[in-house]
Image (cartoon, rainbow, N blue to C red; front, side):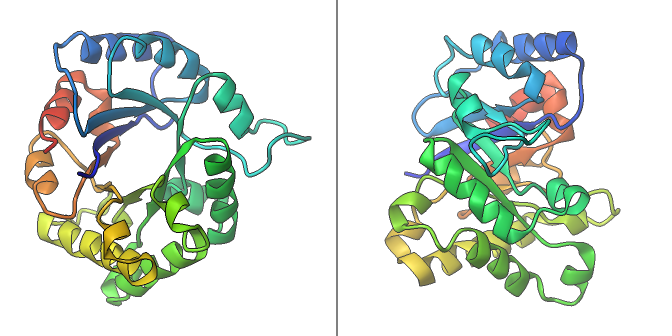
Length: 253
């Protein structure tokens, strides 16, 4: 059975104190996760140790870094390495978020290096892929996402790939006034799974968790998560509101 994951991406939001209050409100709400249901909180780097400490007695609750550099150490001022994350007990990291690709020009090749070094340090990469509006309007979304997968993930062995979580972000449906339906989410998730099956076999493809990252909210999470190839969500704005995120957690299969 695939992991069902609600991953909160706080991005560059909240003060340290606000982050503490938000985590307390979620963790003290009485929601318990077990079996194949998991929560992951991608908090800003200064809050990683605090968040890790708060998750200590909450099974199936994890902390993720929002980014990680492709080298183990060196003269890379301001960057965070995999060994640094390991030393904090952090075992998840978001790699290739659309904002990292757009604002920081991260290429598929660089992301392949990041995925590889994360796996070398037993850190689970949450690998993001997805297309912008011009690609969707040209009906080239399938080939675009396929290229992202091929150039960043498909050099991995089957065993390595099974340690990766994939998150599909329809960038065209985030802040554009356009809306992605649950059917469109399912279509792309199925395409991603089919691409994995073509490369690694259907059995491997069925083990990979694929999250949806297109404006998941409390009022649409259950419908989206109910689609057969959607295994949870990568949640942005709604993850900053305790009640919203708790409802999203409740929507996991």
